[in-house]
Image 1: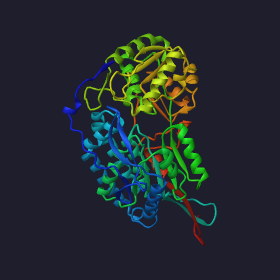
Image 2: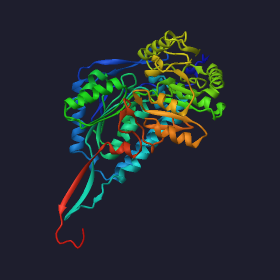
Image 3: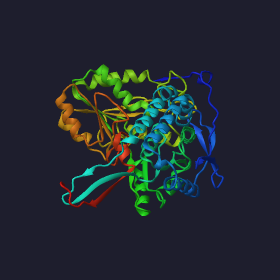
Image 4: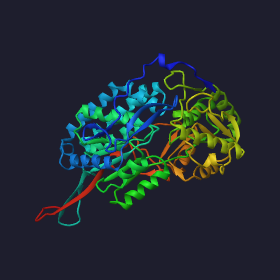
Amino acid sequence: MAESNGNSETQFQIPKIKFTKLFINGEFVDSVSGNTFETIDPRNEEVIARISEGDKEDVDLAVKAAREAFDNGPWPRLSPSERRRIMLKFADLIVENAEEIAALDAMDAGKLFAPVKNMDIPAAAEVIRYYAGAADKIHGTTLKMSRELQGYTLLEPIGVVGHIIPWNFPTQMFVMKVGPALAAGCTMIVKPAEQTPLSALYYAQLAKQAGVPDGVINVVTGFGSTAGAALCSHMDVDKISFTGSTEVGRLVMQAAALSNLKPVSLELGGKSPFIVFDDVDVDKIAPLALVGILYNKGEICVAGSRLFIQEGIYDKFVKKLEEMAKTWVVGDPFDPNSHQGPQVDKKQYERVLSYIEHGKREGAKLLTGGNALNRKGYFIEPTIFIDVEDDMTIAKEEIFGPVLAVMKFKTVEEVIKRANCTNYGLAAGVMTNDLNIANTVSRSIRAGVIWINCYFAFDPDCPYGGYKCSGFERDLGMEGLHKYLQVKSVATPIYNSPWL
């Protein structure tokens, strides 16, 4: 592993923080209590800004604004083409402000500035454009009834939606939730993670600038146990969309069930298998496997954290991983030479280090890394364990950090069984030149997304979500739109019709 010591401050001027208050009914307002909390820069453990701390009373105000905007406001009643026009303007504004937004996510989440600016932000705008294009393609069907009835279905916006988004991809998660809900004609309250509130507030004012009416998008910053819990249990919220841990996902479902039985969609944790068969080009696939775990410092729910390598190429593949890991640069996310920034906060930093200690104690062989960097900030070396057993903690539990568990396998049947031996089912990678193996394994792995000879192959049109404890329902694609719609069936008698 290499370490970056460059002075990124001389290369990029950190922007002033413009928005720190709650965004309710089109205005930035203090919380009812007047309380604030600190958002911390994981690069240096310093306070970036103090953010208004929303609580139940603030959620009530935001829900009231969203309810009024849905029941009596213009957004659900606009023509789909007008909603599309406003959303396209919103997407354009996102691109125009890419540098400032990227800086916010880099400071708040420790994400690499250049990739966020050049890839994540443009991709986020494309998600908004995708759903803008879908706004006028929401329609039901004409039914062929079995007797003298005319029947059809309507697709109607579900109403007021609560979006609870995580800290690892603040921008992507905002647009993946807000985009389809806007296209459907819903109004909403966004509760960003307390670690990364800055870009959500910025997006809220961009949406208003684009012409989204007041009350349609509200942002309540605060903590999950207070603001998030109030949103989930609110009697006037019609749906909750949550991305986060499986543990909190259970609490979200419980709160929804105990309140008004609102529907819930969950995108939760993962322990994704990255399966490499011995017919592949090692020089081509090994870099993909390394990025599969180290991208975004491992803070991604579809990280290929369980690497299964067929025995014929195991030693060669492991050697290649070791060589590449030694050149992997950990450092300031504003430094263009850095490959990996800091973990998002002290809690996650300590969690990752504790799992590394588990791996050492349980007998996994440490190939690379295994330590925190001796510097200020929450930086951890890229860590690879080899000869890992399936029952080890690092092979079973989601770590959400730059820690890879490498295992050896012999046969197709064996690796399918071992890959499925997990409570999770979010994603999987299958690397092979044999089409029959690719088809068999991709149909046998119980996961929501299978990537064959690629990884992190996201696209606005490709649905994304999990099986088992990785959640249910989907983000992205038209499936990501339909979860914000209700199906209404309408039937009327017909008399003396010449045909049925």
